Length: 230
Image (cartoon, rainbow, N blue to C red):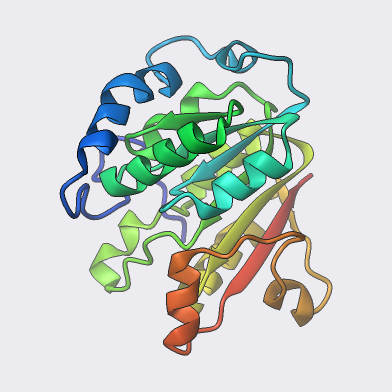
């Protein structure tokens, strides 16, 4: 059984939009820095034109949380352009502060549902798509809100270059099984793991997140799944 749904317009894939009140400088960054970095899916896609210098490839991170992983990847790979998606206002505020403080010039940002952005990317335009610790929506009646679905898998296949990777991390066993089922029934992807060590070990130079640290403290084991575009 498949679980197709529209990429946008059928409920959000995330929960709350805002937590504690922003500090004055964070509010200022939303008004001054974010407009220069914001990706607008209503405009034609020009990935190269988003960035101030030529780059060798492009990466999408969906739901970057506090931005720890995105900051680490962007600074470690200055020849790649990163598009980060995060609807949670406080997470976006942390990301903006990091971009300002570290003078990062290879990150662009989307503040709305990622489902609105996926159709914007050209075919075979991305080198990696990250989906790290998405909301598992554990109740059965909410499973339709999980970001991984047959339709999003087809979207990833369209966006990724041949040989490119979809990288997924979760600490929820059922969501790992859910994702494996949908990716492995896709003719467009190959599961890259050869042994259990491959999904128990994070990717090279992995930057852990606050959410992952919490999961480990609470006794949940992270799972790192890699799927290669055929």
